[in-house]
Length: 181
Image 1 (tube, helix red, strand yellow):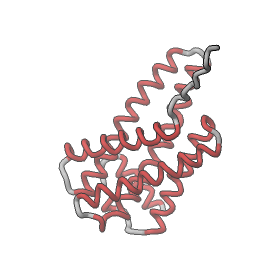
Image 2: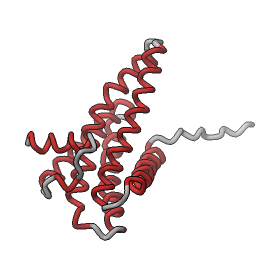
Image 3: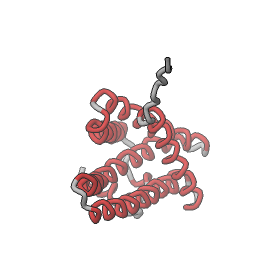
Image 4: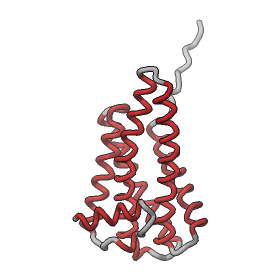
């Protein structure tokens, strides 16, 4: 198991690709479960357990579905298990790294510490750039494409995932109009 964990770290360090992971349905199931649980935990505080469960399910389905679609377009569906394992496992590692940054930023907001808020925001931007690079690395290896095409696909993947989750669960409440009498 340590060897697999180190392989995920190598992928996040851009030194390996999904082809370096075993083709294991058990491993992909574990990574998807971890991905969903982390989405649930990160969302539960803000939205409550019911909505957080929905976000976790939709987010996991988006990850699996969009990964399959990208592979299907290039006719590389035989790489699905390894690619999905890499996407879910690396996302879990990246999200675990995101947690302290969010807490740092929230500490700055709650306690009025502008330094902590600004530092947290700058670090969050760095994290976003790293996430895009990791996803692009996975797409580059999984699709046998150039890094530039992989970057375009990763931006599209992140944007689409973000928009779907945002639209379904985080849209601003629409105030109902009260008729004036």
